[in-house]
Length: 592
Image (cartoon, rainbow, N blue to C red; front, side, top):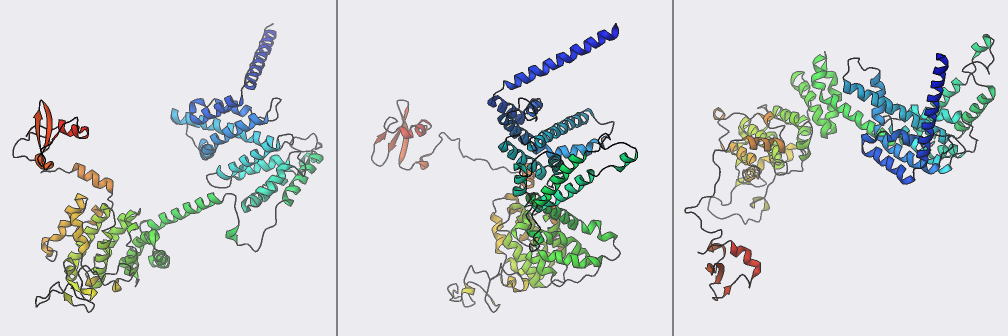
């Protein structure tokens, strides 16, 4: 009696569930395209409408009795826009799910459950796309859109790499379908995508794996079971259909052009391949930047890296900056000789270096490389002049670094202190001034080299020896005294002291300025305590907003309580009614 009651309750519950599904499906059938589009927009706008996802998936399930291509297309577009930005996270969540610990927090566990659910819905979405694309009864236009969607997922779903898993599942669905040889799907796949070298490669790989699964199972024959009844074996007829489909797919792949250079092959994921190469280059740069700390100290013979480092240093730009640290260690600690080191270092002094990521370490190394007192005077003068010229075009943080470097150069090399204030130097190297010894003015001399304002420093010269820095002066540093940024104008005053007297001066720590920026300068100015604040000073308390000197030729007085302006030149009166455009100013005036 109890068992019959339980059976009756189960049947009634199943009937209720079937009735609910029918009502839900009937309700969905009553939706218009506009309402369906609204469901997609809600799903894309907020996670609170995530329950719209299963409803949209129902419209692309194939086959079903109420399947409609227009509704399926609208749902497909919304679902594609929803899943595309989530694909990298969905792929990562699958790898993290296996490594999650049992003591994970509630938030992490909820996120994992949500990601797993999204992954299952995406798999359902893919399966519906495979069913629509491999059905000859589907609308041709819809099948073309579905093919483009699948291939777009193949392109972007694996964080920039070709998603071979989705492509393999797609080919598996095609091979096991009942499509004809001349089906539109095969034509579109061959004409649009088989021209890409990566699509060809993974097509060969996937078809080879699928073909291996079609081999008959000999173990079933040994057990006396027929192929039709053994689980996992296919009939010979279906196997022949699959083999024929594999053959047609392979026959549509164009032959490889031997004459084409390997780098010229067109790839379906070409943009992602470029991003991958960029990531690899950034990774290589990180290795180069940490080579002096992570590799060189552990090598028994670090000189073996000299060829690699010198070639990297010769490249120029950011690569040279990152190779400088390791190369400097080899030169100072392991006896490496590099004759063109300072020429390459001089060539790196460009305005862009003041905005580079590794600029802090670069300027500290420049300060160290120019510390030796054995440097020729022309070399120290060339670096000093080049840095001074850059001070005119770099941000304030760069100007602070330059002042610190120039300060240290002038203190370390007294032989170039004449650059602080030097007269005009002619082509023969003779120093002259605006007036000669006889008192005759020479500023109008026909020799352009002696004219005031001519700087013989060649800023475009890459060889420090040929820059004529010894014939120039540091007039650029003097202009920094009037810099718009107060920290720069204050700091440049440190160069006014006599740097030749080493006992009274000390070197500036370049690392204190090498990481500066607008934000750091602004922050220091806010924290700076100002002792004297400029205030408005009046000998007597002002009685009016404007003085008579602000409006020469006019005096102001009250006329029946209203201000009136009298023109002293012609004696006329200007009332507020006659000139409304100045009435506002008059109302602010008090009688003189």
